[in-house]
Image 1 (tube, rainbow, N blue to C red):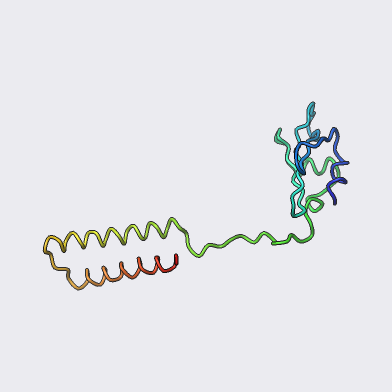
Image 2 (cartoon, one colour):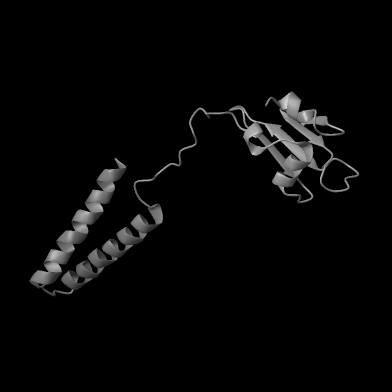
Length: 137
């Protein structure tokens, strides 16, 4: 359904901005326009009552459905962006690895000798930090 056809279903419609309109809400006793309607570049039509009326009740009152507000197929289909990793988790992990390296450096500066388990853990910390760095470049 096109925007003009949808706008014709409402009362006291006026243009309030680029591709935006205000009108009376058909659900509650509206004295001044409280429904906002916006036409997006990808063909969607958004409807919102600023007094809090549910959109489905507004649509029912004027005889249109949610399907009328959206084109059959959106250009990019709004697939969610999947990140390869959670940045917070990565930074927390890196912080822990850097702390381990700092503690090992302090022990070494005091003349302590690292045992084999600690050496292997330090090598693992280094490889994790290096891997995180390489993922960013």
